[in-house]
Image (tube, rainbow, N blue to C red):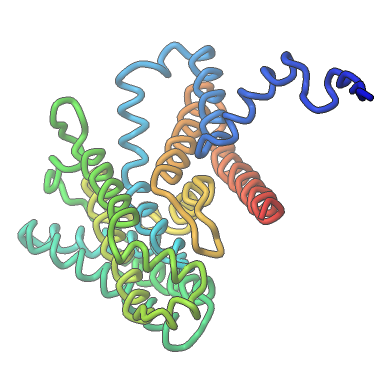
Amino acid sequence: MSVKTLPEAPGVTDPPEGARRSRLPLAALRDVPHAGLIVVLALVVIFTAAQSDTFATDRNIINVLSQISVNAVLAAGLTLLMTAGGMDFSMGSNVAVTAAVAAKLLAGGHATAYTVVVALLLGTAIGLVNGLVVTFTNVAPFVATLASATLLDGVALLVHDGNTISIGTRMFALGNDKVLGVPYLLVVAVLVLIATALVMRFTVFGRDAFAIGGNEHVARLSGINVTARKLTLYGLTGTLSGLAGLMLLSRLGSSSPGGTAGLSLQLAVVAAVVIGGTSLAGGSGTVVGTALGLVLLGVVANALNLLDFSSNYQPVSVGAVLLVAAVANEMHKARARSRH
């Protein structure tokens, strides 16, 4: 006796063809790294370009990229450090101190090469002190480096002694000249970002940073010298802070009390790194995401200027974007955990 099978009801096992087609672009978009960040950046660019004729000009684009160059150097080091589960809230204050000391040396007649070496060594030493405190006292990195930031802000004021220190035309080329139409500051920033990305992607040191951020105890059991790696990472962030201080000084041509860096610079850098998807808990991070975060914050700041918004809105925008990014990161991690 033959048994007849009932025909399948349409849509029971397979979605309608139209619904399948409508979901495919969304699914593909979810698989694109930093898709949400790219979409937000594109919307901001399109809106601003429609409202301002000068936004999309070559001159303005180069200007935006030059303005974020100092932040990019700091963000590169912070991305690597946060990937390893660390944090340095004193980088902006490190910039203030190194810029002030470098300005003092240049104004006193010291050679530029000597000043550069001193600034980089000073920045590195500050980073290493932070690393020693975090590594050997078990003080939370946030607390230790925030205290260091407060101390360094005071040191910068002492170096200035209430006066603005001008360097005249010393280091003018680094801060203002271009090569093939590209500012030297931007070239330095791109090289630092590329070098950091290569380290994170292709070196044992980079893989160790991911392992330490994922689980420090397991990393230690697997043979990684966690203490040495941490000290190196904090020293590296200090070196990059010294470099950023020199870059900022060369662009401004002077160093003034409270006018070069500090907490506002640090928050902008942390915002860019977090917006780019680097986990505050460690274990994940990408330089590409950090670069996109930097560009987004730079474009938002530029848009506010071009559209004649008050400068007071800039910290509001940074805080709002940082809050949204932090919430989005937590939601993304929750979805990832539920899938596994």
